Length: 148
Image (cartoon, rainbow, N blue to C red; front, side):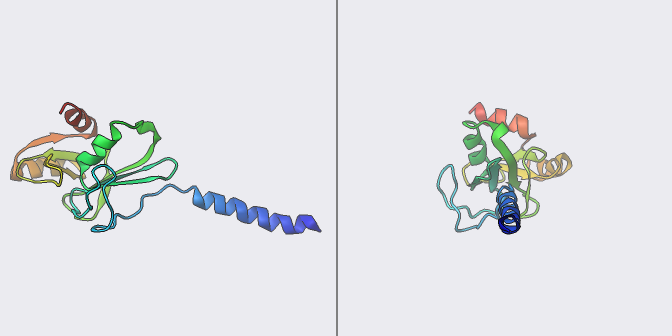
């Protein structure tokens, strides 16, 4: 008879473990969340960034450059999700590794790197036509910011 009671209990425990191990990003609470790099409040919906480790730990940033600087001391293999704010759609987060980036002195970002992200290189070229500046992909952006 004890076995009949254990089966539902074990099933429930396994289900709870599976649910708790799900790795996903949490929505940034603009005006409430603080940057995990510089401790400023995150208020700008077009320059924010975040990443989630494979263990589910959340890191949120007020600017893309804060996330890149924070990642320079981390092993990127431990990161499950990398997101940046889409300049074209405030509040929307896009994959940092596939995004295109524009550094333009005509678009101010919270920490002064003048860095913005969009979903495609075509959109970055459109932004470049409007604001001028240099276009980067994820790898070239990390290199550019590490050179400073």
